[in-house]
Image (cartoon, rainbow, N blue to C red):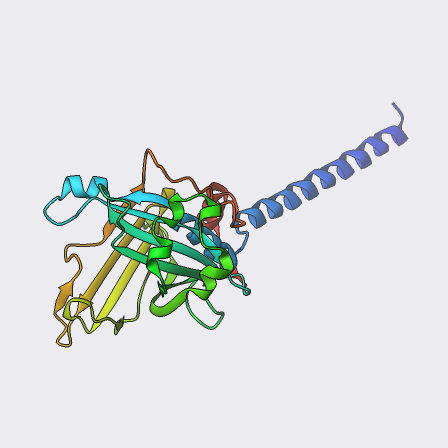
Length: 265
């Protein structure tokens, strides 16, 4: 092999080494970028909407502590979408043995928090103008439900708003939030105001704690021991597949949320 051939081989080796180093650097940068891919507030709102939707119950909690908790059935499903992209969900609660007789019916409005607020998702609760028309809304076929435009017209009194934030690393929850300390006006069972707390956990588990207080700060309704723990029903009669809402895959989005470090609008 001549001297020219040796120099050529050395030049090729150096060039190949430079290419490999470049690929390693670029690949590493892409990998880091993938890990730190930002999750927008709109992504968070979609995830919370998905987590709230479906049929859940407090069966496990009621079995564990029957003195303080009932086996309640909670159902929510997409009902409409506002012009600003906010999702409207129909929500109801009933005793598990009598699902056809809900004792609480609400409309949830889920949307991203405004840029100026220190939260990710804003969840507002509204009364319904004619609750009888919406009874068992989620269990009906879509052609038997009020139309989306009717749902929007039937949004009545604003009841509460919870500002949800992503949970810190190491916590069980994905999101948690509460109403302001002063709560919202409420006159049920001699209350003067009420407060609400919510946590969204993995696998669409929801923890909810609603309480009412009188003017002196005494609790007059709501469980005192801690939040209700609603887990997805193992054998659900819930028929709606949430097809009316454009949602990302819940599993892939959950991974993005857990692994995201940057929040952008």
